Amino acid sequence: MFVALAKLIGTLEAAPGTPADDAKYMNQIDFALTNIGQASNNVLRVRTGIGARMNELESLGSLNDNLSLQYQQTLSNLQDLDYAKAITDLTRDQTNLEAAQKSFAKISQLSLFNYL
Image 1: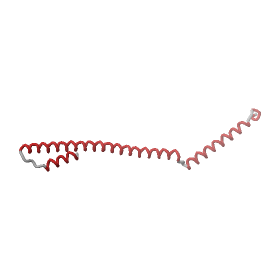
Image 2: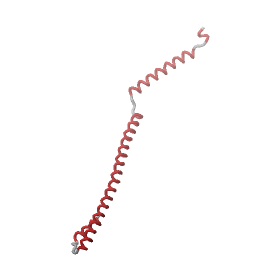
Image 3: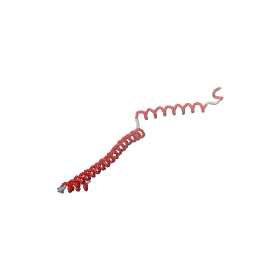
Image 4: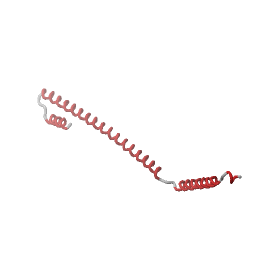
């Protein structure tokens, strides 16, 4: 792009003298403007590609943030303890165990002679 601009500047600085020089002058200006247009299109194409990559990176960053939050919530659910529920469950299980032990003790002492 800079080369095309430099050629355009050089062409504009050279003043045409004859009608043949005028035609050559106009051709050089047209050629330089065409080159500048092509360079501009190339710059736009590259910018579009970079913009698409940046959008993809932002999407991946957002996805990463969402997954990180989900993993933290899952880890919290696995590690955190609800003390009230845990104490209630422990007390209930202890009561069930004691009742089962007492029932076993009573049943194991029974025999057919004790029953008669």
